[in-house]
Amino acid sequence: MSDVYLQPIDHPAAWKGADLEREDDWIHHLDERDLQELDAALRNVRALELDLPRIGRETFPLPRLAARLARWSEEIENGRGFVVVRGFPAQDYAPEDVEAVFWGIGTYLGLPVTQNPRGELMGHVKDYGRTFGNLDVRGYETNAHLPFHTDGCDLVGLMCLRRAKAGGRSSIVSALALHNEIRERHPEFLPVLYRGFHYIKREAAMTDDPVTATRVPVFGQRDGVVSCRYVRAQIEAACTRTGTTLTALEREALDCLDRLAADPRFHIDMDLQPGDMQLCNNYTILHSRTHFEDWPEPDRRRHMLRLWLTCRRRRPLAADFPQHNGYGLGQLTEVAFGG
Image 1 (spheres, one colour):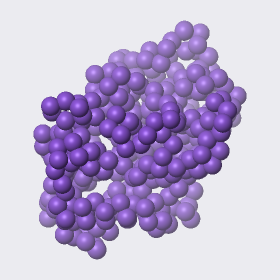
Image 2: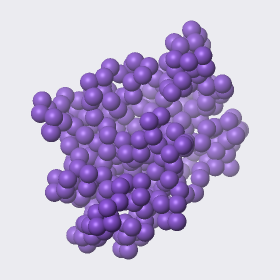
Image 3: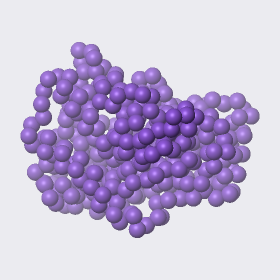
Image 4: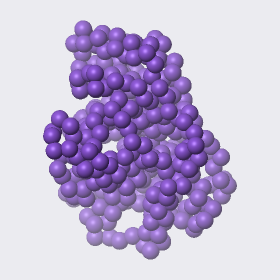
């Protein structure tokens, strides 16, 4: 850990939820011209009969909205770390058309990457009736409360298709604000968090090589830029799989991080409506979801679309801090980046 981080991080992404509750400049509204442009771009890809992997900026043209998307991208990568976009009438389109619109928007922000070993590029976040905590279960396949964590990409996007009957709020927190608070209140934890932990390798959890060979830092820094990577469930699963235990100091450090993230002073909750999009920097933002109760009818149940994106400008990362590239093999370069 560099001595520079004995000083607080002064950056727009080091916000506190209590401050954002009094502001709304992080919410962006699509206007009528934006919606007309998105509809025209959708009609173009439908006329060309393109499936998602073949949709890129050339075939999903947004001549006016592209400038706003560039500003949002700058805010996500180098500013506050997230934006929320509202106003798309998802209820007026078939689900596959909403997917195409979300994908098309995503190609202006980054490169879609695979989200699991099956090579899925568009995630469907809904309750599949599975049990959170099992080694072969991803949290997004359940209706359980998901603790604050990061995903395996540079930028994670959620788009709401349908809300739950109750619950299912999306929450985000600034990892940099948590870093500042830990530095101020519990500096003894920072060396532990910078050293990191072994993680379960989901795709190899039941093999003879189930965990990462080296420790994955929770915080890393390079060139004055701090980044975060944190999935406690995978840390705990690695211990369970290998029969090891965390030290008392390690457990205290992770408990402190979890406790601060859950503190209402730090995080902000969002009740995403159909058509809302939440776009977050995965190196500066941790996200969570509350438990939800669903509707009995299948066509009313909570359903979120998810994109994992690699940004065009890669973030400077410490040598021991892992680059987030999804599952790697299914990345789309030429199409998504415009050739």
